[in-house]
Image (cartoon, rainbow, N blue to C red; front, top):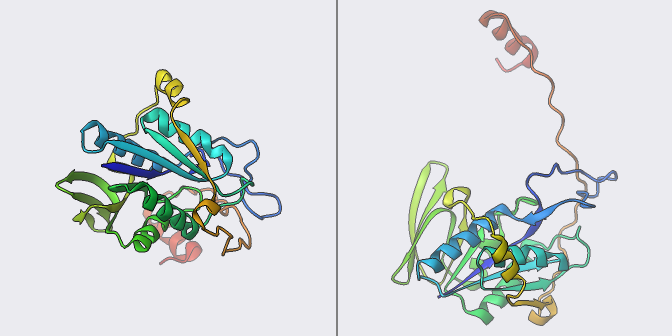
Length: 253
């Protein structure tokens, strides 16, 4: 079985995000970029399934700017077998919208014929949480989202997923789309030898035109603003004073 894993290049989760002075978006100049953490978990799970003998090949796919090659090389260094980069933008500030990404992934899937698609539940830059669901709809495939455990056997995948009330277990018939959550696994670090080997692994470059997909944006960002700063806390001397402040100042009682 072949497993396909979409990965996205995003601002590193350790970086403090800065908004442009004109409010038109996030400033990406000289900012460290890395693989979306949820996608890293998806790559790790795909590699583990390969190590168990369940999968024969892991293919990583990224859609965006040419610099996403670095992200794909990270996936290859972790253990993916080959990669496909669809160069869909020249400007690092242009984000390819979920529907366009889903259409491109559908075309890749039709060409690659994977038995399972593992994706991060969402990207930490736009928090859309939509691509996996849209892809399943376009393909007409079963889907399981927010996976915290995946067991693949006998042409099915049993997925434990995190829901508001706790955990839910579902079984889907393969091929299927599964989006992964934080508690599924702990991604491995790429070793230096594997980083060197990744440079020689196949990385194919494509464009949206190769798949006949229009990636023109349908949404317009009106403005971007940082969250309002929080005021300092206040210590109180007694329960009565706390109740008085909650009632008279905070207005919550």
